[in-house]
Image (cartoon, rainbow, N blue to C red; front, side, top):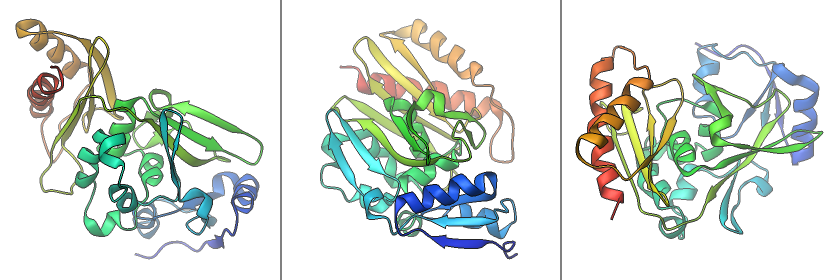
Length: 270
């Protein structure tokens, strides 16, 4: 199929993109890497009247350290972040998860913030944002605001971004905390059947899970061992409300959450 007709705006500066977005509202969509949106356009699952291209805005293509956080602009491609020399030292969880995000070809075009905006519950980058407690920086023609990851995702491919806002950047805390990542998929590069990320905290470990609920979920656990750990993971697995689909049963997903979760939690706790 081919997409429905639309107007195309190649923004020359951010204010131009924000002005068009403010004017068009629900009839406009932002395109950066286009790896998710173009497929939706071709299948006519998305039918915007105006497409706003922001990939030539150099101000959005930066990776910067600001205080204790790493800012990743809306124009930063996944491949560029993966090649960033400080990635392993500053964002070790991202370094572990990013090679599982799609394939070399899609990472060369797809953007980090585009994956966050798309909000697929099986995608790795929304999971990492939730696990690290990152923030999404939103901007419209009238204001800027920051939204914590736990408040940004609102359901299956849904977020709390309003129609006149674009994601200007995301920020992730830069810390050399112990972390671990693992996922199970039909093939490498496919969306995860279950993906788990664990990050050591001051009191224990945070476990985040993707591919099970309608959006990535996370819970902070104290230091637990033996049956206490098994019971806590079992409770968490059931709270995710897994469902059967063509890829896996709900029971299989719960089993993966329990098994992978236990391994990762033991891995990150000294």
